[in-house]
Length: 211
Image 1: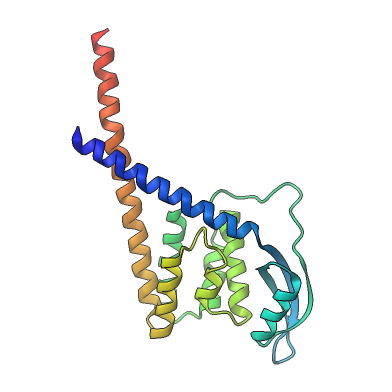
Image 2: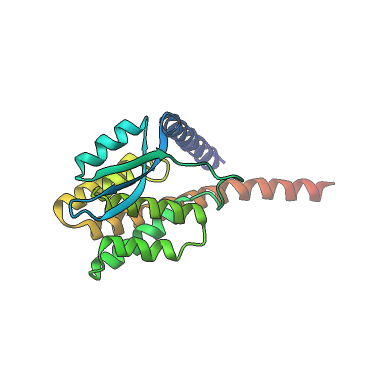
């Protein structure tokens, strides 16, 4: 019984920390606005994408730093009936990291890898996020910079590990390791939930038999 109590306390603490982190991330996101932009790269080729910032001027300045000449930058229109798709879960991120790692190890270019993974998504939210990240990469952003624009799905640890992988040339290995880590965390959460459920179910069964 003491073990179950300790597990409950540990889960409650983890959930509270997760809620606090999510609240902080949402607060940061709420300060930003999503803009859609069209610009010309160094070759004069027209490209487009999305960026989150406080205003259009900052978006233009950031684009110029990436060697892109901005043509138009305007706020992204909100969907009429809300954004479709289900919530992006930790398991979704783990699968994405594993798929991208496998393709990179096989020599598939990163942008093409994103296209393949996004194209296989049934969850519209996940597909839209991966497409947005791909667009940022095509615009000259590093993968860690593109991921950092989605702090709810990619926490600081994930982003920093990817940054280290890019710098050391072992990004595919890092992504595979992160995928394994997230899968293990989800497995532990599942075991904790089962451990909490069993005593409760056993107690209800005993109470029913005494009636």
